[in-house]
Length: 78
Image (cartoon, rainbow, N blue to C red; front, top):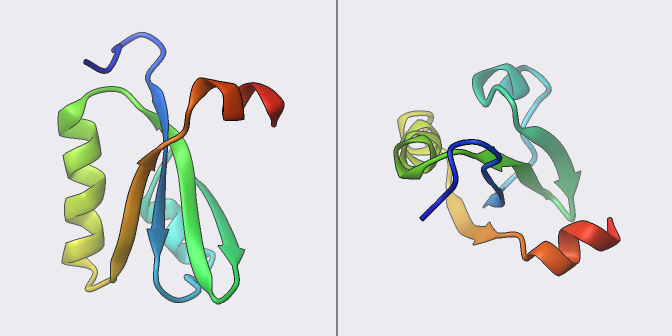
């Protein structure tokens, strides 16, 4: 279960490089372009929040390549 207080950090990897205007559509997520793709990283507070982000990618016609929860040990090293 995802904690509502702190949330879990997730990354959504989207095929192609999104423009800066897309960052506004994914409020609270950090947008980074890497290797021709885009990585959105940020706190996800519950399942409905996660599903909302996934739905937004579909609504925009974006190709979602993967959704990953960032392990605590990786977060601590960043």
